Image (cartoon, rainbow, N blue to C red; front, side, top):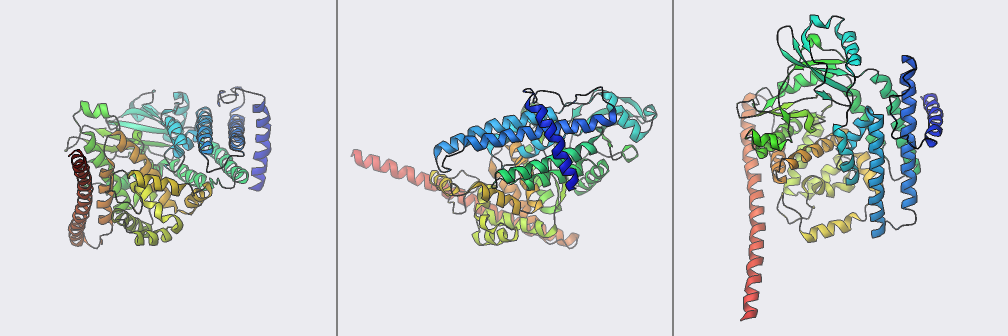
Length: 526
């Protein structure tokens, strides 16, 4: 392994020298060297991509070092300069992902979904969701023939050469089987496994180099999470199994549709599924045209994913809008079509129960339990920030759940956060269980969708609170499940009553203040 990394460093150093004398290296195509033999082309592309990545990160590190040199971390000038260098660096990294494509685009999307990264990065890198460039059908056809056999016409009445969707590791084509069944065929791009080894080794190398250059900036946890998720996504057999597990979990849910898998036309690199119609879940104009209320879509979406987290412990880890469609078909006026089941996390049962307890404590602002759970998650030092991360209020907040913090609370929080360094953030993220990191990323994507649908944060909090209580109910037999759900419903309505009372008290306090102000004005006038 050490020899491989040494060889990679030597080879990429050669590439760095080339890029240093090529000012347009972030504009050049990664699909160069067309005259090289096929066996040599992939490794040469890998070296080219790696050296481009190392050069970009090196320039970015130098930018941070020189821009912030000599500035006090507590000064306004430091914060202003830091925001500027964040924007420049995010733009530079986005260009790197666009040129290198493949796993780099996937990595950029992965980072953009994390709420824990600076907003300059999440905003800039979020544009990568629609950056995938499809492969020519000739290359796709070769993969199909290699996996399904030479006579595709024996299996398909028709096969559209133009993809209906393209992502960073695969694209989807529409087809019709001999039995006149419409299908969607997901085909993996060629040579991905070799490309992944080179790209992920480069990412590990860069994360270690950054930690050496900036000890407080440690991102190896992020690379590990990304590599684990992308490794799962390359196996379409496992994706098909995940799809069927999810379909079984929601078999009695009239809101959820999971495309059926055609196993005789599915391999590790080709996945054939039932074709389902629909539009992206955040397409508000489409919803309004179909007279589907966006708020109802948000509620159903949140309840579906809350059930995955708190009840099933089997979570779809990549719910960006392209992977969740709203179909006008369904008994309730619409249904959610859940696609792309490659990235899933099977939550540890102990963790699932602890996470249910966490949400109960968050809603009731139970500081004692939050501290205890922080110890269980390995981040006791930072447990007081759980309410800020998940509910948008401080642990001492007087604001009603789902309402914005008061000006005073926001000011106090801002002052408190000034004491936190990048070292604290790195330590927090490194210490969290892998299950927790997956939920954070999924929750970030869901929040973005729900925001576009115009739903207030209270909808999300109520859904999570309700299913956290369901998740704490014993699962012994069908009869006890019914009883425990009734019991959980009673607890939920008690919890909801607490929320409503808190909101009413907050409103009454505002009315009282308004009346007092009016009284004082009248008294002074008299």
